[in-house]
Length: 241
Image (cartoon, helix red, strand yellow):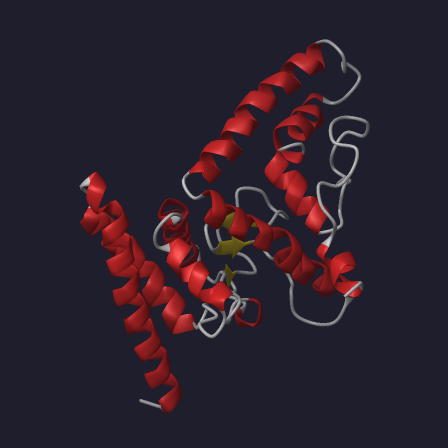
């Protein structure tokens, strides 16, 4: 075994053991410590082998700790997605956007909507063509770093509340969109209007699109909802430093 593979194996084993311990600790009061340990071990094993976590930076240590404790539920979703990606064929793992970036990025993988990147815990699927220096590749890389990574951290910060908040908004706001299509906005295509309310106006998406300097998005119905970005874009903030 080469030194590189030995290092990968060592990091994978250490991260798996630590992840299992954290997962078991946080789920022990719920009586499902073996389940928590299995999730933490799987996340640690995959992430350690790929060198995903930024161990030399507090951000990386915090990412690992949150992924295996407070955000264990969304991490579990990410572990499942890893499995689905493998079964689906070649998901196109993107090491350049993953290594020491505290996330896993796939060019393809399991997607619920073609053309849209989706984040499940610390796993980003559907990044698209991220290789090269052409305008499209640069845009897709920025989509990962400035938009989808925001969702990764939202999941870490909100933990089990993230899917509740996200899906809850979609259901409630989607219903508002249905009513609006029958009353105030009969001239707007039904699907586009409901999508605007349920998806684009979701505060979690509003935040991510704003960080990506894409507010308002081209797909939403103009004149509805938030008029201004939620926060300053990453690109603009970085250029002022």
